[in-house]
Image 1 (cartoon, rainbow, N blue to C red):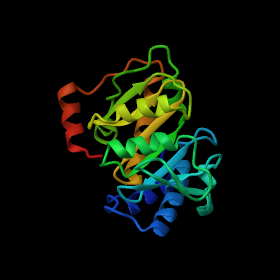
Image 2: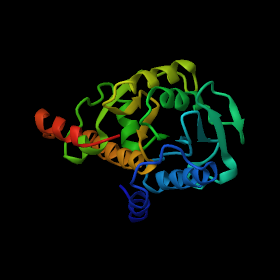
Image 3: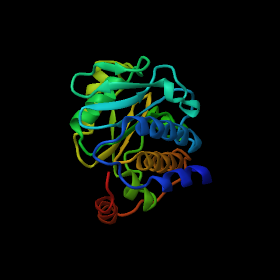
Amino acid sequence: MQTDQSKLDCARIDSDLEASLDPIEARAELVRFSHASARAGLMGSTCGNASLKIDAHRFLITGTGTELAHLRDNEIALVSIDDGRHLDGPRPSVEAELHRLVYAGRASARAILHCQSRAATLAACMVDPPENLDFIGEIPAYVGRFASVPFLMPGSPELAQAVAAAFTDPEVTTVQMRNHGQVLIGSSWAKAIRRGVFFELACWMAVQGVPLTRIPTEQADELRRMSSV
């Protein structure tokens, strides 16, 4: 569940990121993003990675082997969106190509979080995972639509391409990677975290093993239209 501190973090920067970010300030924002994602309960382990787009050509991403809950600004890499070159900082996350392709194909994405929250990751491993999670209004409003991709090796070009292809659908804001975890995008990091919190709640409800009603499709679609990336 979302903590009071993470709610404050999200409220503080709930407006969209500007068209371009100052690289120094962007590093500080990525540290805040990473710490807030852990406080929100989205990091079920020390794994995961986060990134922020600086402009149309560059993004910052957490370094390989870093723990988001304790990320420091010297553990952040700068990567080219155009060709994937490592421009500065430590070795980037093994999923850097995934982030790059998503940014290249989805201009509205300003922040990306790959996490493994508990219930959502459990759902990603189910034999018959739930396809409709519209249990309460906040889920279609804040999560939007989600897509799933089959298990592909972490860090592989195939996984990066599959996730990026899923995000070419403008209504998709969350991707479940089967037997792996989640990728969430947002026009701000606060929106990406909020999306993850409500997706986790939806999956937690789905795995309880009790019959649940869902919002009618027409109303759920209306709620999705009211939301934004």
